Length: 271
Image (cartoon, rainbow, N blue to C red; front, side, top):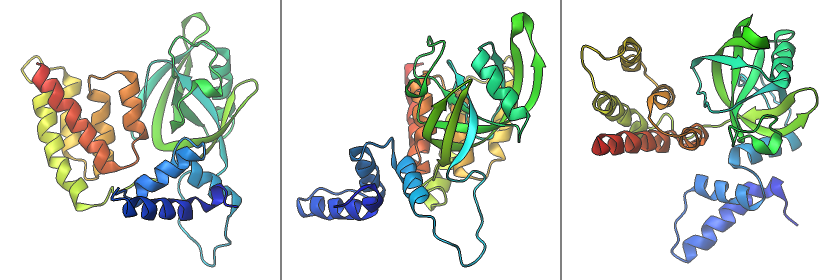
């Protein structure tokens, strides 16, 4: 009997069966569908689970990602904020569990997992109250704030899929690498120019335009990777938390750029 470890074979069987019925799916779409049928958040999470079951011995050294399957990080839930890789973000924390998570991080390698809550009103979110994809971040600054709060400055590094979450004095996530798709294809690089042009039209530029937007535009123009550009533009979109999280969870870089373009074009039409 097949189980989750046979997911790739199942995806191929599904794809062939649907093709016989004139239903076309890409390989990645088949994998995503099988992951959800097996009860996993997406293919990234399922792939991490499979890797944790079967870890082959490498015959030669290989380049490892910044995070590895099974890595565990103290977790900081974000109420109404979605962070993206390469972003520098200020955080103000008042919840004791979050403060303990940061203290644990500072005693180690200074990394936390920043992950958005599904409902901003939850004061003590549990594992099921958080989205399944977050961002590994490094705590750069840490200072006491007013009323027992803690001020943080974090440098966001990369996406991570949550495989399992444990709850004790603070939340701890077992994480796995988030694998991006089609980030180096010609279409992705072609879309970069369109995204930049549309971004300039999306915001109103005048002598009174805030300095941070002018600085952002200059930085965007110097980006050379499609995935990095998408993540740099996303925080400047006028959209709600759920749509920001959707962009964070979109592993297909071309699809992510297309979603960003759709948002900006809709904003222009509404204006």
